[in-house]
Image (tube, rainbow, N blue to C red; front, side, top):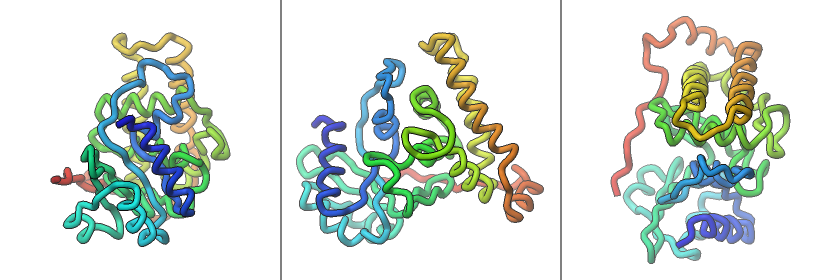
Length: 246
């Protein structure tokens, strides 16, 4: 199965039924790799999507129609927030987030799924990677790919929307903290001698990362954010994420 073709097949089929289904995860990042940079090309084992919470019931009826069976036990227990399906023939796994993305931190998406025709908006896609507390090299490179391939500014049209990042991180200290740590980590990774980027590419990624970090300095911070900032990292600021058994 060509996983990229399958991603587009499912989104097109969902669109035909007016179901808002958008890609998230590494394959969503790859969908924005316009430069097709070889550093960021890799294999993908499964698919991740977000669907609107208000369309949950239509979506659950839709998945068997396009060849997927539910993980019944998981979906019964977690179906209002997250669901899992398996392709009937290949057994490829699909992970579905309902309304919001919730892992180490929560990223609301219910009202933002129309901003991009294929993936969740770039600002939230960036945060969905940057919110990983134990960031690995693969995810750091996914973040670097987003910064290399897309502008940083205002708006959602192939732009990492700084106003959205400021709004989300300015109201959630934990998300801000993890994102800040990981953006510094990305700068370290792309500066390494073992990363196949030229000097211009490295400089562009670092400059765009710094624009996000600069945004944190000037963003409005909620009272809850300010109170949580006083506690700092003495108290765990993220959720532990458990792997889902098949």
